[in-house]
Length: 274
Image 1 (cartoon, helix red, strand yellow):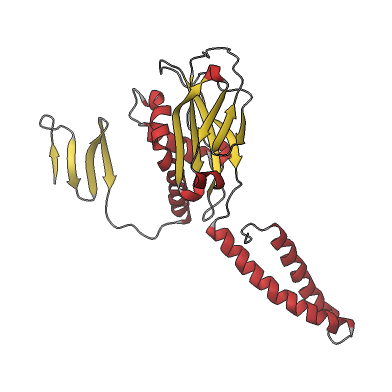
Image 2 (image 1 turned 90 degrees about the vertical axis):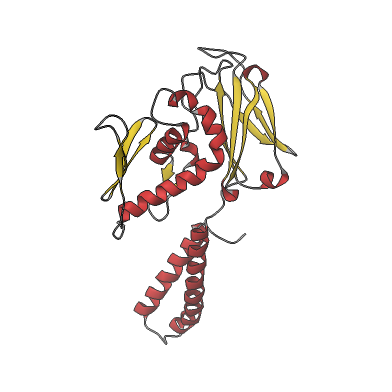
């Protein structure tokens, strides 16, 4: 059932046939409902792209609600919508079914405030040490507030610090729990003005502890290694037979080519057990 709520022909609310009408942020929305057919590769790719983007952004909700608040004001979008749009378009790499985050291209804030310069990061005993140039130029101020976001992808968590330091401080220590210190870390910062009317673009400070291989990469390495072991054993046996003239050159050359290709592939394939 659908109903009009404003005047005799006001906005619809409810279901008509296979369409559902509702209001969202003051805007009338209509969506189709019902059974869908088998998804195409393009649809599957879009779904995986959205899933990967959500896995990145969900733990960063607190940071994003602050960093994209200014840009969302006066629009029909909320901070999460903006963050999703930026990163689904710009921060993904690879093709379905192997779409991943390109952490260097992640955007966690966008604005006109002067960015941080000469950023440096290092691991301490119980956290991270950050430093930056305290020089003031353009619209920067010594009272600008440093915001820090640390993504822990393998743990599907994040550490956020919305008032980590002031621009004039030049250095900052970020305390972290011991398990976070050994997991993969992707670090981002931005500055916002003390009156909260300006914010800078986010900057990717860098990766700490390397990038963990995915389960798919580990499985692919395992399968390739199993094939290599079989081919290598066959190759070693037939190498002796070939030397003694027991087998002909052509089949041996095919076997030797596969052996060398697999050997080279394993040397550069991610997913190797640690």
